[in-house]
Length: 158
Image (cartoon, rainbow, N blue to C red; front, side, top):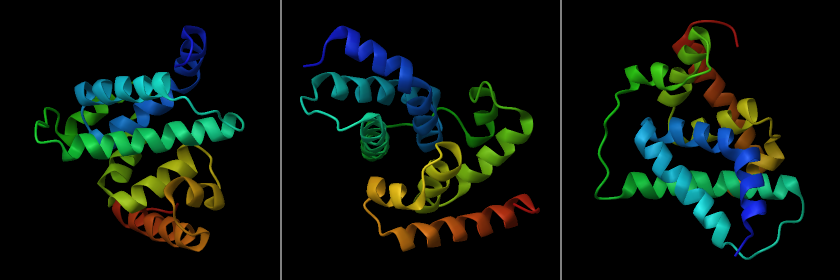
């Protein structure tokens, strides 16, 4: 079990990222907070060691995505926020960023993950491949197809 200091430091470093990941997967602020707590509880109980901060960040991303998927599969899950209401929940984003975020949210999940990790978190295709257990060339294809879908949706140059 991790120390309180170590857990507090992780919350400070990764809380915004985890909330964004959960929000775009779950599209619901209440569910986002539930999964957010689950992710940090898993960190608190995780007894493994991380090679470096990038390994730790990748672990958090993978755990957050998996926890969101688990939550979406849950029989007790219910939606309380329509996609149109996401703009109000996405505090700190400009109106233009919200429309782009909504377009990213509308993508199929495999494209959404690749686009988010590349453009919002700054990961390379090779790193995304490791995080998502996909080949690097597959990630390039997902990014390319995702960009084409976004270009069609947003009607402009990306």
